[in-house]
Length: 230
Image (cartoon, rainbow, N blue to C red; front, side, top):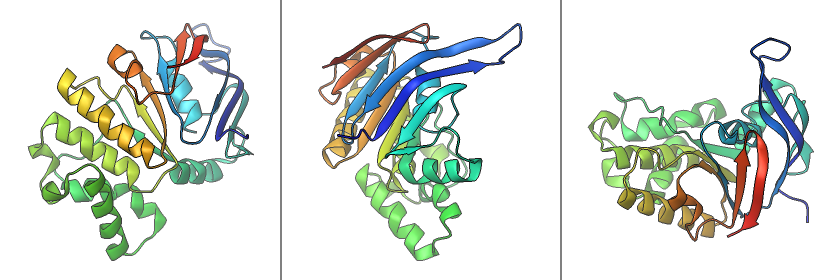
């Protein structure tokens, strides 16, 4: 079966050919199937986030290949890579990057503007995404008035509003206590059951051990340190 995402001998070097060059990803090959939930685990500096950016087409590898849905994307012109990124992936960042003075609904709708949809369709999609994370009653509230856990759910709704095939999450439990972390993971498990593919970078053992995760990929010093079903 052709994997949804394939990484072949990928390397990512920051500041190449300079004295401060850093090879953050050092020859990693990885295949991710549609509907799979994969956790990239490892300590800080292991290369998790750098690998996540390659998987999600947020950065290009210095060398190697990245294939998404059968199409090699590593060397696509930027405008085509942007389309792949926008239509295939939803992103939940460690820092939520929400706009505090805007409403929950307006924050969720932001990724829709490049699609040139009508206002009615944008509101409909935002409402559907907010319903997925049980935030419909807070749609008109300003983000600045929300708790940390509620802001996390807004970030997830924003990631879902373009109906992505893959949800990318970088340290999603970093700012949550254990109770909220379990709630978040249970919510992600429901999304996976609905057909979403999940790729999560984390150093949180709670995430790696959660039944949601099908496979843990362990990294150290930019290299694979293990790849096993959970």
